Length: 485
Image (cartoon, rainbow, N blue to C red; front, side, top):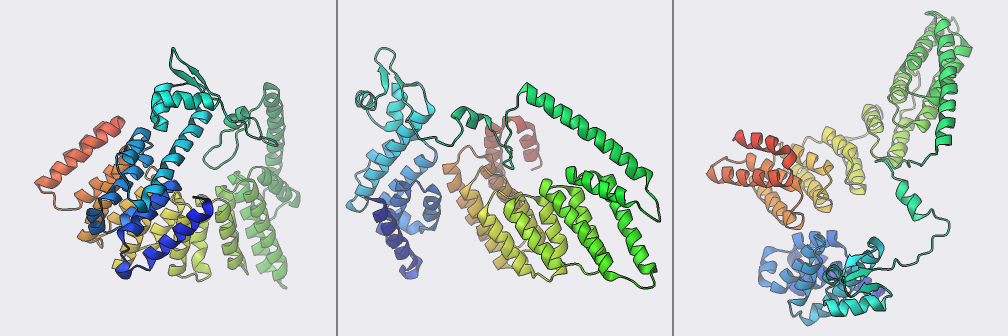
């Protein structure tokens, strides 16, 4: 089955599901579509499809459950479990060919993984990861040019040769670790460190001289233009010197006072002065997009500006968010100016949804959404539950969506049926991610909101016991949580 055939078949099956009468497709459509998602290793869509399939169809179609068992083992990367689930069933003609290719692709990915990750590995492990008997596995390894030691039963894979022209070596790639905002930490030599120290000393000396001159010329009723220009140079280098931002605020107030005192007020001169301040903050934000002082000074200038361009500021926010959607300074600035240009609440909620769909792991987007949402009707509660549920199913390990889920669950508008549906969904997710503590914590949140009868207390005890096993460092915390009940 070639790639174009797979794409066409997937589109046809998805169309059949969408156009199915009463929204329920035939079991054969569900089986084939689920099998194709496994062939493409698209486990997220496989999970969503399994959630969409009605319980009655699952119960009446054992083969569908068998395909899902393969998916669960693939999600857990349990290679022996995958091959066992694939080979312990006689597949029907509708999915037999697809499941055969699923097995071939899983085996191919396993071989590639072994070649890339191991310099030596036991034959038994290779056999388990490829689903081949040890004797056949050994012959296949030799055929690929891998060395197999008969006495020790060790296999020495050969890493495939890849073209790396124009790229750094693997050693350099490993060294260039990035922090959570993607800035590269580059290796430095002792000589480079010494040179860097000298440069820092020069900057420190220049900074001290500049600050001395600025503070010496500081006056309540006038200012020195050279000192003002010097403060701009220092801020461009380091925009987090709050003393200089406050100095420039004093200068701005002096200019405003002079403008009011002049018999012939020159508004354009004052506007030009404000615009120069805004341009300075833009330069500072280019060097440090997360400078508190730059963002605060910019908003302060706009509030004193005689003709502020709020639409330009809004466009600037969109630009910065597109460059780094986790820059909470920019989100805070957006929250300050959104009412200045009359953006509706519905538009901002739609914007937050768009940013969350682009990147579920975005605390700023989730928090911004929580400042907008009131969840005062059934539709808003249902929509946010669907959104956050999709997020936690896509990446259960990421914590941002779980915090938002807890906030959503704190609202009284959630019905008992919605809580039960969410609890059932979490049970399914736990089958795929048994090591994820957040799933169990969310189950605790849900159970606590119900009537704490004997059955609920027993469930909480079981959940907290599981949490202690998964997260022993917080054993005391979980015990205290349970003691409350």
